[in-house]
Length: 159
Length: 180
Image (cartoon, rainbow over the protein chains, first blue to last red):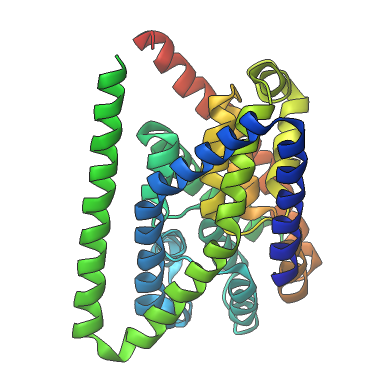
């Protein structure tokens, strides 16, 4: 993770320098655009960061409970909804999901959890609305939820 | 016309600040009411903040450079309405590059959209960013096995593409009706 950060920053710095030598006005313009979007997006991003902390802090220890008393369709949907609301790094999510599989959780519920967790972000909704608009955000998240359910069900059938 | 835009922008940022104040208020409330959770909440937020602070400025500069150097024609050719299969493949590759948390992807999607990328390709880009990361795939492989990983990956690629095409149709037909 640390390495990617260094590579990204280094790469963009190089691009910025090349751009500066090629055309100063354009480069200054680019920086202006960057500064403006930083100002525009910061409050929303700070909100999202706080929301992630709250949701994770309040609910992370409830996940195991959810998989423990898994019952039928309702349990499955609950897990999918939970995955949509929750936000956690995949480095943590996969080991956790793996341990649920070992403890006897069904493949489809584990798949539902991971797929909704990665694809749908209730907490990042404010940012998505701000950048892509309301309509797009609603469509994308609703459809993502539906395909997460389909993928998870199919996983249960295939494996 | 420009005045109207300015006003809209101001309204938007006002809304974001109101939203932020509400979130801060809720956070404080929770920290006070449930003190035993406060360290976990603060730690998590702080981790995400650091993660964001380390890449976000660079990504925004990249977006700035993108908007001054890359022409609209270029983006439309490669990711626009008529880019077809090529556009889909390019979007998957762009999204799967290992570049960090989801909230960086939204400003990038916005920049691509402004330059004429189709909704199909933006949906694919965002979804691939969210769930087809190479490092993420390796962790999944390690903890959930090769069968699980490949089955989920394959189906995700198929369904993301279908979703992208459907959303493009839905939004496209609506904006035609409204004659935006």
